[in-house]
Amino acid sequence: MIGVIIPAHNEAGLIAACLASVRCAATHPSLRGEAVRPLVVLDACTDASAEIVSDFGFEALCIEARNVGVARAAGAEALLSCGARWLA
Image 1 (cartoon, rainbow, N blue to C red):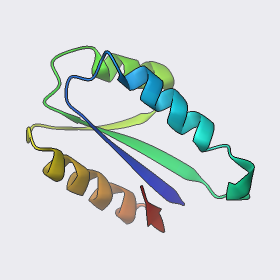
Image 2: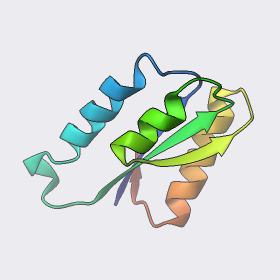
Image 3: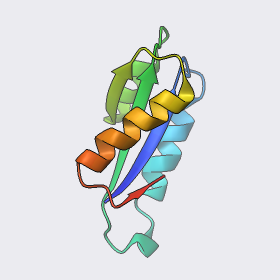
Image 4: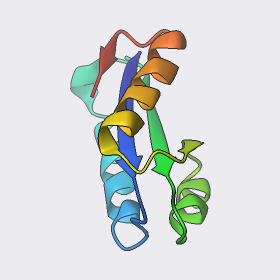
């Protein structure tokens, strides 16, 4: 499985385009059926980011770090614990 970590802090204006892009890339034929598991790490969001992620049906992890490095690490840990072979 390929894990895709998407750190976000109040990204309501841009997150839908990002998620649409990830959804499209996850179906690329060169993946040859490899599962792709996106994970949005919502870091101290106070806008509509969580609702948009939910509308897309993507998994989200909520943290309160206010630090992109910590958000990426939390996402990596979660995806690796689920069996991710690759991280993006």
